[in-house]
Length: 467
View 1 (tube, rainbow, N blue to C red):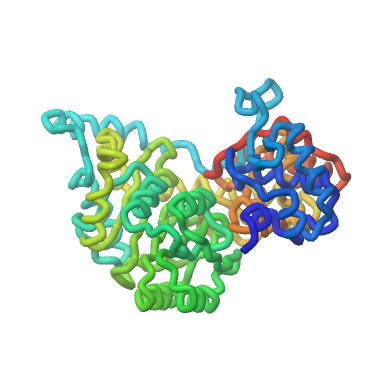
View 2 (cartoon, rainbow, N blue to C red):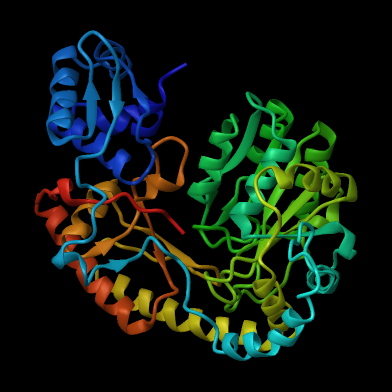
């Protein structure tokens, strides 16, 4: 089995590359989080064999990385990932105006303030309690259950747990049901931090492809049957980052296949409410079988600062989740829960605001893309972002060059398990149109830099999360 470094690099991506180019690609993996600080890299000899390059080339590449502070090497020992001294320091003056496209999220809904004011009597009524909320407020769990019922999945409040956001929910699920060393089926591309959570819980990842046109459902079902993964992580509505939606008939088929092979389906519905003009509304995958564990969140429809998420699962799974939750948290903040009750009480107004904002953001990205040679924006009926085809396998190079122009955006491979999809970029449709227009102008200049052969000064880049 090959090393994780080569898996992330993609051997074909460095075929014939110079030592400096190999070093640049490894540096990019470090800077966007695909290689973690402290991670052990293959020996020079092993990496040379895997990449079918001379050992001197690999020695030179590691030497360049060590000089810049991105690896530490012990004579006769290991090579490990580091970051340069001062690398995590605050932004310098040129970065103050940087436009961050690594975060696909809008500012708060206009109704948030009024909902907060209305929530205060509800919060005051809870002062006589302990203040800990392991399962979640009954009225909020009922409001979430009602959303599922309205969409076609019969649900009771007893099948809901309120969490501190969707990623917190995923980690709680993996803590409760995870099995180290087992396989996990994941979409490729997908949400990077879900991949990291699965890695952290010891899973071996098995990818299945998704593109703007949707899933290769034959591959997905055959992978379920052949690999029999313990869990599968799917984003069926306005998939992040492609924007695709899984058809109803395919949902039920996948749920049935997963149930037959004993796979827990972790279905992420964080983006399910982000409809612009899809024209139809699918039923939740939870309506198709008891083996579906659904994760949702308020962060994309209300505000990222609202750390409210939820899990919907059958009661036996809920019991396991409640048993392990106190080992790392004692519940979800009450104020945010009280606010969420008020917001969910007026979902039509909330989703209408989201639709207007996303429509304006999509139009702004479309205008910007049309002015960049070789870029193509696919139909984007909803979701957080557009999955742009840049026409050449230069996503990482463009990401690095964009930093020089004051734009922070992750390259396509950041969303994958193996360093592929270098022709793709995720561009959020969530920024105000004027900010998006400025970002796209800067991106166009960065694209000119890449096509003109300019090199980015990667010593100034910072590690960023992808949201």
